[in-house]
Amino acid sequence: MSVTLRVHDLTVAYGAISAVRGVSFSVEAGELVTIIGANGAGKTTVLNALCGLRTIRGGMIEIGGEDITDMPPHERVRRGVAQVPEGRRLFGRMSVAENLEIGGYTRSDSAGKRKDLDHVLDLFPRLKERYRQLAGTLSGGEQQMVAMGRALMCRPRFLLLDEPTMGLAPQIVDLVLDAVKRVNAEGVTVLLVEQNAYRALEIADRAFVLESGEISLTGAGPDLLNHPRVRSAYLGYD
Ligand code: ATP
Image (cartoon, rainbow, N blue to C red; front, side):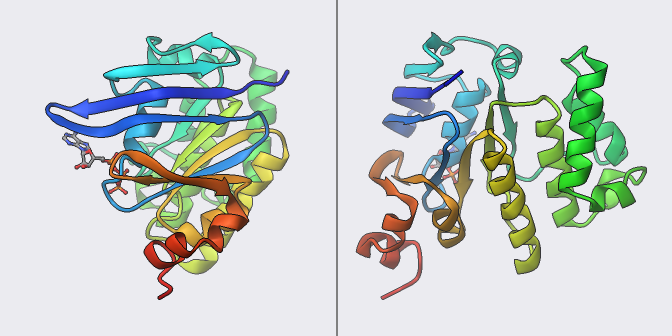
């Protein structure tokens, strides 16, 4: 089934400050779409609004034609929306195994969960070696793998990733983004928020630039890589 995520005229405010203003976009089933933008542009706020973690001031969010604007987060998870939050947010005093288990807590199909766990461990073989280790003792890259694995354990249709490469060494950035591409190729629709604009645009089908809470540019990932404004503002070219 082809399921589209549609955001229409989204507005989110923190008190008197509008963090996101009139943002509209859609993500088609199977796409890998990225949102790039400077610090404070509103990227995290958009993802949190999609997951139901932030009350919105206006607009509408739809999945496969169903209005989910007022749905609580767990109902959205049931509809296939999973977020990998900024800063990973693992349970540091629990093992890798337990953190992954938590990702599948809403599911009762143990055979399916077992299969998805095998898939996560195949995607990130390192986690097999670290399986019984406490998550808080892992490296940043390993923690990111657990955070992604935890989200995949609810077998999402939409995977929302918030700055998954932040603070990681270049080799680990490759590993994480390769995993994002693979998951997408396997059929999961991806919305990727990144400050590492170059790497994000390289792998994205489409991209949006968010500036002060508004979408200022949209286009195919590779096209935006060559866009003069993107090159000077986000890629560090003169
Ligand atoms: P970053 O890359 O730094 O995470 P971002 O693009 O994800 O940036 P947001 O975190 O969504 O941006 O923030 C958007 C705007 O909303 C910023 O001006 C920020 O200061 C403000 N903001 C975010 N969270 C809060 C909050 N809890 N209370 C007040 N203002 C907030």
